[in-house]
Image 1 (spheres, helix red, strand yellow):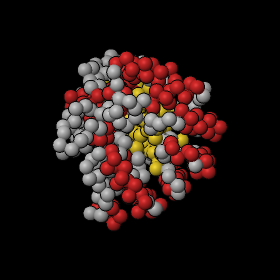
Image 2 (spheres, helix red, strand yellow; image 1 turned 30 degrees about the horizontal axis):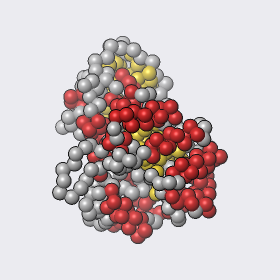
Image 3 (tube, helix red, strand yellow; image 1 turned 120 degrees about the vertical axis):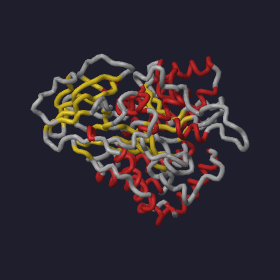
Image 4 (cartoon, helix red, strand yellow; image 1 turned 90 degrees about the horizontal axis):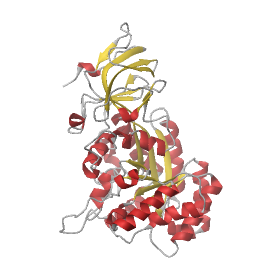
Length: 437
């Protein structure tokens, strides 16, 4: 079934009238909000939002689409993904769904198959999916063991250029921190990341050398003008406290770049006082935190024959209440770390609301896939609806939260610079020749 109100006029200037917008993603327009949703008319001229006006106030002579209270969102930001791993499940599945099983399966797949052609085809497939769903900004982590780091970052630079008018891309080097002991490798990795305009990342693990490893990392980041994005405490072990060590290292090194920590699962397994001290330290150090609710729910607390006892996610509400920048993201897609997913931020938000209890009220829930991740990624021009901003918008038939969160919103319409894009999703059969049927 198609909805006539969801077809914007094919005109240089037009109005989206009777729209419902998430207030947290609006700038320069005040209107009464009900559970974080406001009504407005949106005037679009030559691909740019020229005005946000009270309902009925748009010029009557302009062609218009009456959205009948349907929602309009800014395009989404997906700030933690793994485009290089995407869609390898058919050729290297995770036999038991565990974290260890995922590590082994990805290592096997990477060593056997990860050429530029292989990674490029899968990455392109993922980007086409994300674009069709309404995403305009993605950060991906790239497995960066030698020599894969050179292959993947070169490919990424090409992909970033090819997609620059559709999806803005950022890349993070992902590697075990212990590998920094190989000074030649680490120096080459930093040089490649700097050359390609990426970020330095890594996986932190509890070990006697953690503090010195973090000092080396932050010194290298400072010397090369790099921001940092780390995989942190993706574990159900309460003794995993590398998040605290990272915050201490930021303060100790007086590092003034941006630092993001992803996962941070074990924080939710610690006693209240321990967790509270870490949250305070994270806030003091100015870290940003991204939770990956779908992947963490899938991987964490998975043991044979045993029902999971916890949800796998970090202390999202406590961190946000302490003033820490927080967001959610897709993480892995159809690979051994997460067997499902399609890089759809609507699915991510819908599941995050359930898993993290971002509801009752839902008044600021929209921020976690719009303004918050865009700000963390240093792109305050993204994830917002404002006069003067590009008309990069996602239109929904849903009028209120109960409708929005109860269906996949597969009838959404995506506008880029005010024009409707083709939302056809790529067919999985396109990958059969590289990952198998």
